[in-house]
Each structure stands twice: as C-alpha cells, then as structure tokens.
Image (cartoon, rainbow, N blue to C red):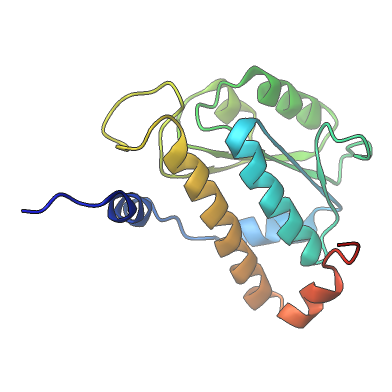
Length: 179
C-alpha cells in the first residue's frame, strides 16, 4: 500500500473530525450584542479570520487585547479558542467575561479542563493540544486543531448566511475598503 501524502493525511484527519454547526451556536451569535474573540498563537490568528467574517456578516466583532477593543458587557459574547483548555490568559478572559455577565463560547479539543468549567457553550474540534501526544493527529503540535478552527469558522459563516438570508453581496458592503 502506498504511503499517504501529507496533503491526503491532513484532509483525512480533518474529515474524521468534522463538526456540524448547530442552530444554538447560530442563535448564540445572532442574539449577542457584540462578539469578542480571544486565542493565542496560531489559534488566535485563525480566530481573527473568524472575527473578520462575523464583521462582514454584520455582527460587530472585536479581538481581545487590540487597542481599539471596547469594554465587554453583559449582552456580549466571548469566543475563546484553546486546544488544551488550559491557556492561562484565555482562562482569565473567560472568568472576566462571565463575571461581567456575558456568555462564553469555548472552541477546544479537550474535555474537563479549567476552560470547560467556565464556558456556557462548548464546541469540541478535532486535534490535540500543542504539547499532547497521541493518536488524535499525526501532525505536529496543535496543527489539526488550528486547521479545524479555521474551517469551522468558514462552515459557521455559510450556515449563518443560509439561516439568516445574508447574501455575499451584503457581506461585501462590510468588507474592508481601505486596501
């Protein structure tokens, strides 16, 4: 049997870990006054891509720790990505958001962590934490989680568009024009 290419391996791992977007997740975002996202490293970069799409969908979205991010309030939603569920800064953000009365949606790979205790909504994506070993992925560190996060954000975007009748032309009106 021929060895699987790296590309085929990645696609195979993503396919095995596919997660469907739920109506409750769509409603969580729709009902939020504003959305805030937080993630570290590559997870944070992919979450910024999701934030961009949410803004283009018409939902005011901010990246935590950016200089122009406003104060978080009780009608807001914090979306946190941490594969391990133990990233201390993400835990602190989640605690603060919960104390302020907002909702917290966790995107992770790991069950029963400090982060899962704080979240009002949890989505388990494929992958492993950056320091985990095991059979979840042949890719290094958190790669599968980070890829899953990016694809989940795009799947969420399509589902949100379909559920709330948002056209691509509507999104284009919200696309950055100082390019």
